View (cartoon, rainbow, N blue to C red):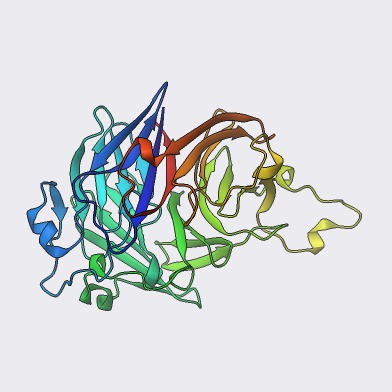
Amino acid sequence: MIACTFVHGYENNYNPGGDLPALLIVSNDVSYYNYEFPRNPLEFQETKLNIKGELPLESAKNFPVLPRFGFTGCAIDSERIYCGSWNGVYEIDTVNFECIAFITHRLMNDLHGICINKTKIYTILTGKDTVVVTSKEGEILNTYTINNKLEVNQNNPQLMEHDWRFISKQFRGSTGLFHFNYIQVIDGKIWLTSRNLGCFVVLDVETNTAELRTINQKTVVLLHDGVYKNNAFYFTSIDGKILISSESEAHNPREQFDEITYFNRDLNSKVIRLEETELGYQPNWCRGIDIKDQEITITIDGLYGSDLSFKLISLTENGELKRNNKIEWKKIGAEKNLRYVTGFDVKYL
């Protein structure tokens, strides 16, 4: 069974109202689930969601233009799915897929990837290059802001001056110095994929330091998501590629004419171009990734101005297509003023 999150945006500041589709569950069939998405401060006061954390500050303002709706990054444990949104994290049960709690505070804005452990939620304030650690009750525990010298500023009080949930992204493209997309904790360190750099920034919270982990890339990439499975990192690049990176020579063997230790290199990488697989074409968008039993599952298509649909596909490293689900918006919601719909993250349940 696969959980897939997706987002959708509308023209002319249109708000469709009511509960909106944001999660699909794929087993033998494809099922869709709708949720409430409060946007402006008054909607937080009136919501039926069980809020854990913080209500809007008195200084919070209404959006001049509404941000996108839907779920972004997701993480799972044995009993819950945690799904990011523009301004919070939804805690969802894995039986009926109902929202148990809406975890939110002032440092949640345009969430991308999220990570969880038994007691904590890790998110990113992307526009401020900041990792935010939150309890599952919505309390801000720590923040770590990384600057362009890779210096780490812990618990910067200036971040707390604004209610970031009601601050809009005012330009297309990346935000922040690094545009951190995906976050995961590996052996106590926080690994962040940087779209702008095309590599990892690794945060050590014990020493309050950060370092780069670079990737030997043989082609232009725009990394979006990167999950660690089978002793390797599997990435999506939004231009229709999958990268598999590790310290193993198997992912990028070298011709050993001379002593290879003369040269610096960190993570190796293998590139899968989707147009060269059984899919047979280059998709216009690509994000979200998970791995199970040697199958790679991602979402593709759904770029602005394209067909109001996206696909959930699974394939092997050799390019054999195992799944090809087309998700058409006309089957799950009203198309009025809809600008785009696109998949965001995938997780095996």
